[in-house]
Image (cartoon, rainbow, N blue to C red; front, side):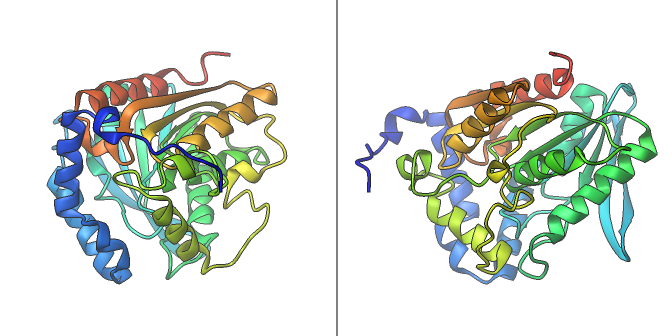
Length: 316
């Protein structure tokens, strides 16, 4: 194994972020990963309620269903009173493909809607292990097609962590669809299928909030340990063709085993002649969206994320 220097998180991470980490660990202890899936979901949902931020009064949200060959996919649609009808956003929540849903990221989606004016649709894709890959990907692609046609607008694909993986996979697949225009993608600490034996997976193997062991666990649950080679719908970094992808902005957390995924993904798009920008947020950790009202660094990053959603696709 390569000689990897262990980061000094006591200096990389500031006290505000440590307070967020400690609060998270009280709600979602490290040993949660060893509990049953049902128990993990209960703990995760309770943690999200602990960090929940109320919706702005200017936002109206409604729940709906989108059909995928007889399966009804729950979605939540957000609309601002000062609606901007230039584009719309499809949001895919994080949660390691096994936890999370419409409620876990309700406040994030509402705030994105309030601060951009764009319609936002949050997708409650099917979760593993009850529904193995590619169920989540298929649900998400169907929702993108449906919402793009319903709204008749270019769409921005956005997601955090597992949701960043799904957003990227859908962007790759959407290149083959004539009736969908993906104007851009904004990915937040995404898991994109990097090599777990190198780079940030080693440097930040034991980072607070997410470890390399956690990443491998979620990947195994998602596929029931099925080793799929070069499945772009599973790991977008495995694609051999990065041309004709939408303009892309990726926000990684510095203290996160997934940070190199964003770097390598943007490098691949740029090498293929596309536009991609990688922002590695200094001193931040996986899951920092929940800290956007209490941690200055996270607040600043969220402002950049909103700006990215507002501007991606206009730069080229």
